[in-house]
Length: 266
Image 1: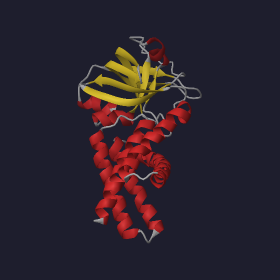
Image 2 (image 1 turned 90 degrees about the horizontal axis):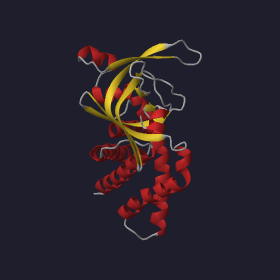
Image 3 (image 1 turned 90 degrees about the vertical axis):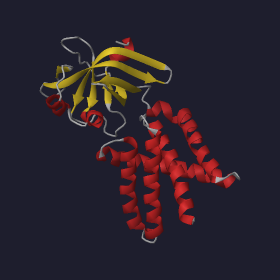
């Protein structure tokens, strides 16, 4: 009975923390996935507490892989990013756990009400004190686009140093991580082109400081949407280059937006 109660309590707290972390990191969330991902984390954590609680070092070493698997499952990201997200999860767990403890000690309420109140207070504090700093002056946007009958949803960051344009259509070029492309299409762009015939491909020449120029393969997409709170920019056609390297060191975003799209809505 105690194990079941512990599992349910950790499961609810896990759901809340996954949604809270996803909100802060601007991740597109599937709430059913949040439910069973939190269940995986709760079950793993409870088993570790039940059988390994006497061995603190071993418990910590086992908790981290469980947390990484939970992050990977919840947000559909690579193992490398899941490791980074697990660090974020430790931080949000520390904050939410502290707030939860304070609420529970000072207010005579059932634990589930305390758990529900915890993310509300943290989110309020985030909006009041940390939002401008974390969002780097409103530079993060939720991005959606349609390509090859598949709708892609990622977090984008406005890159003021992006001056890429398609030499044929003269449209501004955004840059998407190949890892995000693989998540939706299950192949790299080159593999996808070889396997499926498509004419929605562009070649974008580029140069970077201190390096020789090169060519990036890009896709020609339709119905690009850039959204942030009440602001919504819709672009009928856009060009998105696919980068083989990670764009964000800490996994905060997966696309670099061209500033012209924000300024002009082109």
